[in-house]
Image (cartoon, rainbow, N blue to C red):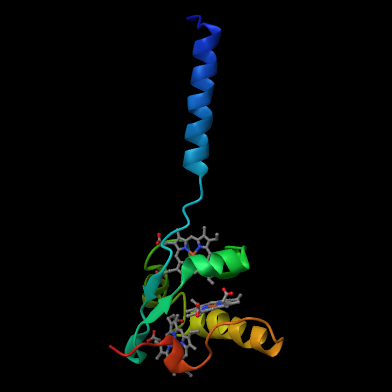
Length: 116
Ligand code: HEC
Ligand code: HEC
Ligand code: HEC
């Protein structure tokens, strides 16, 4: 086996640590996105703001993976029903926070869906 000098070993382990940190480093995705909203019109979605407010990614991503377009893919496959994300997540949460008197997001169709 080749023998390395201490400095080389420290250097190598540093590179290794950084690589692991980078590889496991969370991909937070786009800060803002436009979700497909069918004939009602698309839905602008402040992703980063929700990440910061809610902290837990799984609140949403338990239902669909952290991948652009995953909602529409799962809807097309029949794994997710139409409006499932909207009803079970978006408006459900906004409504319950409003009821609790907390800061919340829109619940009216036109506030979320923007007509093209
Ligand atoms: C309030 C709901 C919600 C929360 C909370 C949330 N996301 Fe997302 N995320 C979405 C939606 C909606 C999409 C878009 C899916 C699609 O395009 O079909 C998405 C897409 C993504 C994508 C892929 C899109 C891209 O731009 O690369 C990544 C990566 C991602 N999220 C990471 C995270 C991480 C990490 C967290 C936690 C820190 C998080 N998300 C929290 C709703 C959420
Ligand atoms: C908080 C934001 C929000 C509000 C409020 C909202 N929507 Fe949505 N809507 C979405 C999102 C996000 C989607 C795409 C994901 C899904 O289908 O669950 C969607 C999808 C839809 C679709 C398309 C479903 C499909 O796959 O064809 C229709 C139609 C729709 N909404 C109608 C409405 C109507 C009617 C209202 C008012 C009663 C409403 N939405 C209120 C966010 C919202
Ligand atoms: C678990 C709770 C929760 C879920 C799920 C959630 N939101 Fe929100 N949303 C919030 C809260 C809380 C706010 C208030 C703003 C803040 O402090 O982040 C908000 C604010 C918003 C705003 C207004 C942003 C602004 O600055 O005016 C929009 C638009 C919005 N949400 C869209 C959506 C859509 C679309 C979805 C589904 C893909 C969704 N939200 C899912 C909790 C949620």
